[in-house]
Length: 261
Image (cartoon, rainbow, N blue to C red):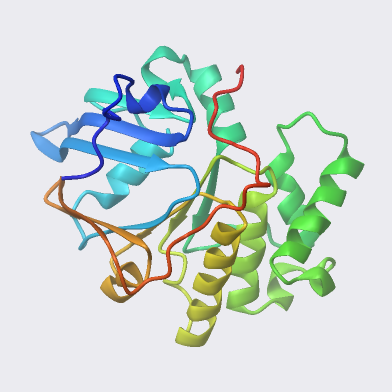
């Protein structure tokens, strides 16, 4: 019931330059006869803001790993940012992940004793950019998330909400085609969580493509698109009319087209 991989005009979703994620018939099985995903179809287009929502054990974490290229499916096809994941060896897959996918996790994963700026600059470690350029871009990313005055603060000097903002800055500093936010408010109080969600909406309005993986139905219902997953299957893919639609400024360049890896 999710977005079909066929665009209706004779081209596949993977060939459509506006498609960031194209999954078709994706199944994931583990040893012992456990099937985590069952024939999932999902298309995410550039500039979308969506929730992938489901209870514990529904398969949403497995779906995150597949979309984030952290794992490969047992069956089906996966296209990320114009690339067929099955056609990439491990080295090129790592390059795809580094160039096109940003991750935000519930646990922040910041390096202790390292400044906010250098934590963010770590997101560009494999970019080939000089250290001075990485640190400049990190400072710009922190300004973008409202932490221009926290460049030199270390994680223990930041609140939970500020730590998550640093993690988001690290995820977007390389301008990935896709930002995957896995339970981004799970470790935060309600006020900090609301602020982080508003930041994600702001980034989306600036052109970022964002998928929020959550078990929180309230968060899911507040986003423009809601993909519900249960027992490894997409059981609903709906637009939420009460949510303001995401918009992509015409000045934002396309980030979905595949680059040479």
